[in-house]
Amino acid sequence: MVTLDEISHLVGKTIYDGLARDGGARFEAIKKEAMQRINAITGTNLTTSGDRPQSLDWVVTPFAWIVEYIALAHIQNISGEYLEYAKYKYKEALDICAAHASPIKTGRRTSIGIIDGAYEL
Image (tube, rainbow, N blue to C red; front, side):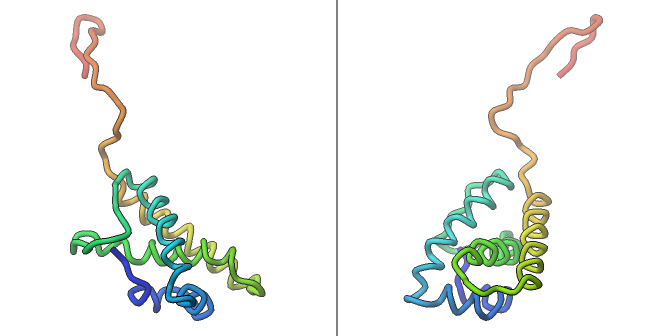
């Protein structure tokens, strides 16, 4: 869905280098968690593999920022300034995902009731 090369310009160089190490094994592990967070917010069921439809191009930026935030836990000697910036981008990523959330909430039932003789949906 999103490759490490696609997010290279959206994350810090230290983060990118750490994700690319070991043939991208760390990226593979982190991207699953990032996609789970996106799915939880948007109500979608996006996967980490396969082609991304053009209608989902919006997901690249928030995905990159969420991956960067998760990856910070594995990087040592991060400056406080960079950490604050990464937290800001993470919050922005969550806001972008919320803006793309599915309006349909699963698990809710539609019910009809009579209130003062009128029908209400």
